[in-house]
Amino acid sequence: MIVIHNILLALILQTPTPADVEFQTAATAGQQAVQLQHSLPLINQVVLVPDEATYLDELSKWSPDARWPILFDDNQLAPMFIRKFRPQKVWRRLSVGKRIEDFETTSQNVIARAWGGTASPNIAFANNNIDPIGLVITNKDDHARVAAVALAAGRGQRLRFVEKWGGEDVLWSVDETLQRMQKVQTLVQETNDNVVAITLCMSMSPRAQYANAKENPVATTDLIGRDKNGNRFAWCGWIFGSKKHSAYVAACSLFLPRDHYWFCNTYPDSGIWSNYGIGNVDEVLPKLGITLGISDGTLASLYEINHGGVSADVIFFTSKGNQDFFDLADTRIAPTWVPILNTPAALYFLHSWSLKKPANRMTVGGTWLERGVYAYVGSSHEPMLQAFVPPMETMRRTMSHVPFLIASRWFEGQGEQSKPWRINTIGDPLMVCGPSPVTNRKRVDASERTGCTDVVAEARLFLQQASENPSDSSFAKAIETVSLLGRDRVVIQLWHAANEQGVAKKRTAKSALPSLFRAKAVDAFLWAYRLLETPHRNERDMLWQLATLFPNSASPLLVDNIRSVYACDDIRLIAPTVMKNRGKHAVLSIINTHLPKARGRNERELKRLLKQYGK
Image (cartoon, rainbow, N blue to C red; front, top):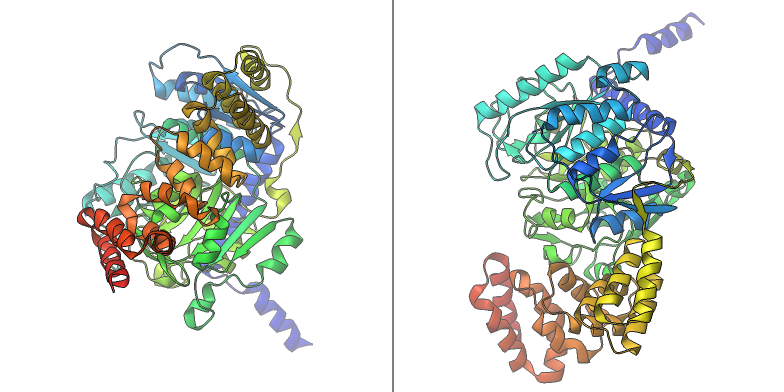
């Protein structure tokens, strides 16, 4: 008995490892974030605003008794959010019509009012028994400042301002890195000792030179939140971009459920690669109220997934490659083939270099962000495979309330990559993915709003106008409003009605095209696409992602819409059909049309195709 007692005593007194301590700190932070969100009644509505002053005014209407999503009024991000959130009401506000003279003072007032105060956030937080665990940092002239105010108000965090930290392409020098690390540490120390999460809402470089790094450059978000010696005291997330995109990131992080996962693993089930597979997620996740889809990582499976887009809340995608391509299990593909997202998504993307230039929409990472990813774990330089926490370990952590971005980092003492390295974390560091009840919050019925118009009432009015005065313009307006409400089925009915009345032209086609894509209505999509005057990138991508469903007669349309930057992948897809219908000389002609301007991988692949079809 004495021996057993001594063993038990040793277990009780055993000193936890640094990784254990970090895990518990992260899990506790996630639990606090979840508890706070569930204590705030969620009004079942979305409010759309036209400008920043109105956005801040709407944020100031939040209180400890009522919260709701606020978005800038647009035709891409707002509809994506609404399709997932499925609100009872969608309101559109008129502009408050005033300029923001002093953003710093205004933003602090907004945060205080969101917590029922009139003086300062400090007093408002104290009155609500909130001890902030997060610090939000922005620059008063940066577009992402709107997300900073929303997240500070939404999670009860301090908001602080710093000078500009340079552009996206300006690599931080060793001195700049140290200065910024120490600046943030000072801001945290001035706030309180409980801060474990830092959100940077500003444009900056994803990469930096750091004196104590094993190898440079390293990820800026893995430096901020550490002291000068590289010891971590907080985890960092990064938000940048336009005002509408930044507000979208904040709304997604604060309000969306995350109960549908998609896994795409391109790695072989052997050697070290097998450690990064998806394990038994198909058995575990359904027990936690989460639905999932799984792809085998082949080109054929990607084509199939791309038909109509992806509607997953959390995506785990393993790959290899560079900023301008990613490898599947059986081939290499361009960023243009990144799936189109129908609803917002958080993304774990195991891949080298994808976030080297995240603001560049022609890169892999830039494309994912443009598609609507609002939280992103990825690499800004070659990190080596072991730099990534395996998907199953990340899942284990997130299901224990560790926030998504934090769960994707190695904890102290878990190898060389737990020191400052090359994984960047974009988004809200306190955003939690977990069992379905964690992210699905109870909602309170929406009530009437003064100073707002009901978008459903607007839709009815526009539908009546289209019925009484059918035209390309009237139908387009009706379709745009109905599409904003997420009613694809009604959009398709309106598209057919406009065609029957002979008024469907370029405006109607443009407004209906995304709904036709999501419905995989191939014939209608092709008809609408041909009516477009100058298709933009997303419309071209929709065309190609439906391409394997098209009849042979559509191949001339595809030839006319080859995406020149990555022409090799488009030509590879259609070459067999073109050769069958028009002969190999037609294929060679297409290749030679795009070869003179091709560079890098695109040039090499086009030359390979030239040899293949020139035999």
